[in-house]
Length: 399
Image (cartoon, rainbow, N blue to C red; front, side):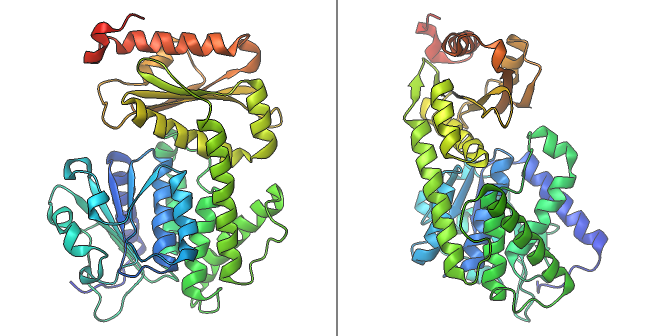
């Protein structure tokens, strides 16, 4: 079926609501785009991956082999945000682990990257196909399932990801369910901006007031972040090379933070964890931004959960300028679904925290914890006692 402009605002809102509900209810996402992906393709996939990461979803980005070196900076950001990179279909998980494919910036089905090799996924009626695209040319055709095609005029597909993010921000039920406090991180804003800049040639080819508004909003958001957090000497990009350099700098910062945290990992029977004491946390907060630390704590929790096969825990002290809390994050492996992490909140009478069965976050005032090593040991010991009745390997486990 030929692509057409969405007829009304009401119809667009219905499509957006269905897509956001799918984001909430499903897990195991493949992101793909057209052959020989350009700036908007890569930026849209990265931005979408970051958005789904906020909802604690498992994401696979199908990138292909022939990625321009400039764009690999964006893929590097994925490595530290729990977005798994697949160069071809052989890197994808088994079909039963995938619930949804999101097709981005692709004019028609025949242009989907690795189409032949991912055809079994596309042909599987149990896998939902969502399409987000701004191509409305005469030979364009839909790739997504009926009712799940956010296909409309825009400067870029990245602009439509930005549009979705504003809609998600208004869904207070989802923001609360997934404990999202900030959708517009530097990486997300820069990814959206990269797609808009790439397709509009630094804004020169923006056609409508709406396109100019989105470009202005995301430019202002990122500029304000640069000024507020002093990440670079200038907040104005004059060409795409400067954007790429900023992406590279951000991925380098994330890698350094990630390594610092992962070097401090430990192992219990069923829980792999990272504990940063006051000294470790002070060193961390002196070097890295709050946004980077929060993002890397999430990435470490995801990685350690998969390493253990069961659960993970990440613990660190906030900078006194941010709060007077010690932060905790726990994650459950995607292969282990028989335990609801919210039980831990009840077990330890934790009221300042929340989450969903697969991930929780909570915090304690620093003054409440006299010995962080002992406190974490109690959390792990109590949790593993709960786990002992849920996993076969626990038969030989003596808490």
